Length: 186
Image (cartoon, rainbow, N blue to C red):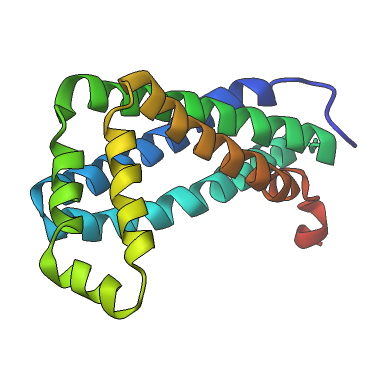
């Protein structure tokens, strides 16, 4: 029996906040690791990458288990609405974190470090050996264009990326949110 209760909507906000915080931690570990050349932070970024990927599934199963306790479950459409809104709250929370980083903490450090990494003679020589001189110059031009973007434009670019990822993942996470756990208990 599908639930007529819409209490799962409040869970989407709570769970979306947790997912957004994990995405924000992933972003901050990555940019700070790149900005300051800290390999430990880049390694920690891999941990947050795994957490950020599996957390929506775990939270969807948690909601499903909570509903099972009161003898209800979500239909797939309700699970889809839950997971889509959960990812949208995650995008919003991560957007706040990214905006705050670029507005108050960055001061061009990230793009300066990326520019220094790209300008390394070894990297340039590797691109030349592969016959990719044009791609190398395009990479430098793109980095300069991104550096000239406003804080809001950079944030919007990352928000759009997360929106597409969340929209696609919603279809898979909805299955976990709406799966009938009574079949497993028998």
